Amino acid sequence: MPFYKLDEVEAGLITPEYSSARGPNVRGERIEVGRFFYPKGTEARTHAHPNEQIQVVLRGRARYHLGGEERELGPGDLVLNPPGVPHGILEVLEDLEVVNCKDVVPGWSVKHARWEDEAARKKWEEKR
Image (cartoon, rainbow, N blue to C red; front, top):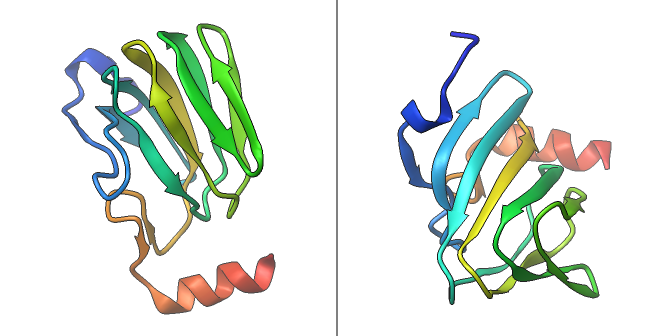
């Protein structure tokens, strides 16, 4: 189905291993897009993944870190997380709503935060 209403897509925890993010997420062949919510006072522990990721803040504020840099982001701000670079949300200062976009990496499970296909992992590492 090519058309979606995010309010009608089932919302769930996105990556419970390290993040409090919850919301609807739609995955295509090569990209996934979601609208995620982080409650005030929570975090997304430092992590890295093979996906390139962009988050656009719609409402709320949070302290993000990427590599060795830290910034407070609010509405209209965007962060681009390159593949394999450690990043996270140090603290959600106000209830946070973001649009999240990631490329799909074959063999990588976003939900479980791990490679589910060893051959795919090796292929990804060879490309880097």
